[in-house]
Image (cartoon, rainbow, N blue to C red; front, side):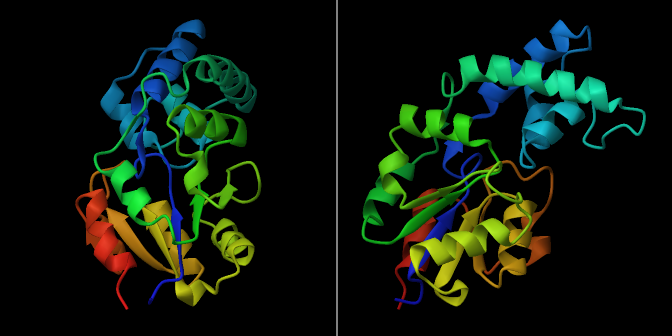
Length: 221
């Protein structure tokens, strides 16, 4: 086959996890006497790790405020971790056809590459019975986060495949840029957390509307 292995993003690609993040965010903001934010805003802020998500919540905007105090941001992140620890996986659901699609790809070596910290990733994967689908799991606190190429290249090495034999499946600009930096072809999913970006502007090799659309791409010869 053209692709010997597949690398998957987690949030916005396999799992709709925004409600857990939204709840943890507003509990954090309330505890610090900051204005609460909408679920839609949180959805547009997801994709660059929890530390950045919290900074955006404190700023009330995608663009982090230049006046944001770093000590406050660190305190808020720790508070967020506490709330998210309790909430992770509670309201998260798999996107349509993810279970069917991963089962269809059971013979394809697969890695999960997420900017989420390992302690939350493991809990979420276990709750949604996803862990056994992946041969390698790379998390945001293991090494550089996407859009760095580092986690993708590390996953390829662990799977024993060349980047040219691999494809990345994600829902955001960070996924596309990471894949391009690693010289890995990429499928962009239209349904996830794209931070308001038109993903076609970043020239992924493929754009897919549903998870099952990736199957003919991954199984082509």
